[in-house]
Image (cartoon, rainbow, N blue to C red):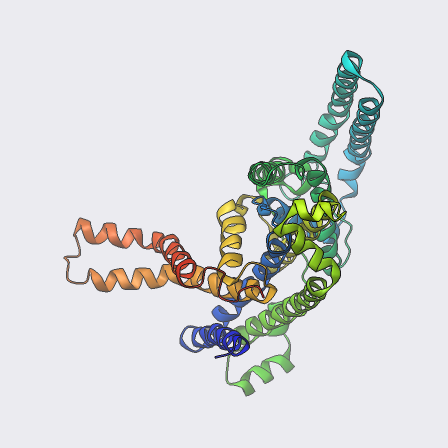
Length: 433
């Protein structure tokens, strides 16, 4: 069996899983899993750029994903003129003071030596921090006091939500540039620790800065790029079509909306894969893999390894931010409390490893397969345990304990799948050529 035929069969098997889900459970369920799987594939593609192309071990994926999720709130939600008037200019002034202090500190650091450098840089940073807090704290408090039950944040620009997707990528890319300038000089294990901590800091800031996006109070009712189900259901023409299709308007509208999202996500994913494949087969892609395999030899050939690492780190993080904006658009709400490393870092890494590190199509396959199993294993586990304990009395403590433990089947199954793939296909289901 040729490798190409094997790859086709693998994708066909995953497609068959979704068809079975649609036929046995519902097409709403199948499309819901597919949509999140497509978004996860974009995140996995970004991680594969960093790890598969350049060997950068980034385990702060959740932070870049969360930053992307902030974009739909700042771009597409209605403006809050009262909130902006209460503290917007002072917030901008506070950020300007902070940036100015950092730039001055960097300039002084480069032009002074010894004790003078230490004293001068410390003084600039301390004064900058005092100026920043003096301006920022009362401004943030004033913004949060404006309609706190429904808003309490600075609001957005009221632009189409699709514009928020590239902006989410820019947010994550900007953060990656700042992080990369300081962390990419570290050894791989220290880089992993640094990105893990920075990712958690980003999520923590989003949870606690209510003036920005309401923090853990969440932002709901975000605009969407597809029709609303209620609008479709109120259309006599659509109701007639649903009847012709042999289904009710509620089910038909839900399926149509999910199909529209799936089409948008699939187009974005295919364009990104096309670009990633072009980059991989270009001289730039060959150079990145040469750096990944032997940094010392690449430096000896005159390659600027740190600069190239920064490039790929920014590109991969931008894809994570793009996916974060798409996920918030799909959900219609921003919920910072749901950003946890298990779902948005370690499961993504599992997708990349299972699919095949260094292979873009492998990342897509791993994402669709792992997300499908992640969703389905828990109900499957409950059914299996219910059947296994059917002979026990209903009041049995052992039976109740096993049924309550069904949720842990998800983590155990992911571990078993990872062990099996590493044992029988250590380079992933679709290895790098």
